[in-house]
Image 1: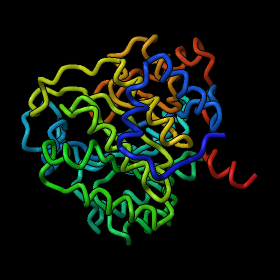
Image 2: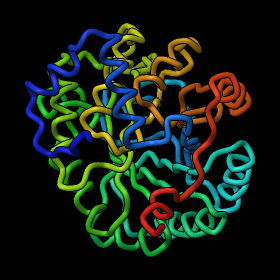
Image 3: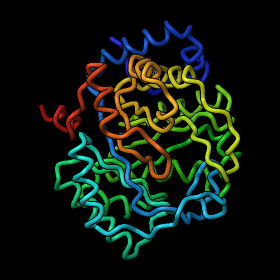
Amino acid sequence: MTAVRHNWTVEEILDVYNTPLLELIYRGQQVHREFNDAGEVQVSSLLSIKTGGCVEDCGYCSQAARYNTDVEVKKLMSVTEVMDAADIAKAGGASRLCMGAAWREVRDNRDFERVLEMVKGVNEKGMEVCCTLGMLSETQAQKLADAGLYAYNHNLDTSEESYKKIITTRSYDDRLDTIHNVRKAKITVCSGGIIGLGETVEDRVKMLKTLSSMEIHPESVPINALVPVAGTPLENRPLVPIWDMVRMIATTRIVIPKTVVRLSAGRTQMSLEGQALCFLAGANSIFAGDKLLTTPNPDFNTDMEMFKLFGLTPRKAFKEIASMES
């Protein structure tokens, strides 16, 4: 029986990451099968409910107002528009709707009240509701919980040392504080990172050390491959090799065995064979739908064909709660 640990060292995680590739995939699959249904993948849909015009300077982001990208700034969507999008996502096979707003932080205003309405509405459709809205206070997190929010996404992006080279408008501690506030409100945590930012392998490992050291491991860990966006400081970064994604997913699975490891941004650049290796390594979630906020993504039909080919089935909503109650 593999132990669920909260005391991994950087050196230990580095040893895992540097395991010969085929052995690493095998170990990732072993741990995955021990803790999860290996034939089941969570399908999430990501919707940008407020696009562009963000004051932050995240070096990878097309929605930062200071960069000259082709993203059209759009105000907060109406509740009706979001309900329609939720219906489409659910019909396409998604069990979770993630709503993202290009804000630095949540403010107590009419926009936040509208988001709370959206959360209630999507929750009533029997879907897990996730939000990524920037920094949150403890009170705001509780309001979201009361509205029925199931998960909150707040990625660490990279290690604390590397973070300062990518973002200067908020600190690593700001991110950790928001995750702490989400935990206090008993909302599940979705937090992972991006590879391909110019970070070292040690930076990737240190990010996993931070996540694995949390008192309660994040219920979901997205692993994103950078999608370079013209006009941003990272526009000329090379694409991440598939082998790096496979290594990162397998290492995450071994170090945080019970979490849902999401194969996130960058899938349009991956072959079917590459994605199959990611699932073998321990990935058990994807984003489906033709957009990830503002970046391209495979559409639902393409992904359902992939599921059929691989013999995968979509995970039902609220499985964590159901398993705790049974």
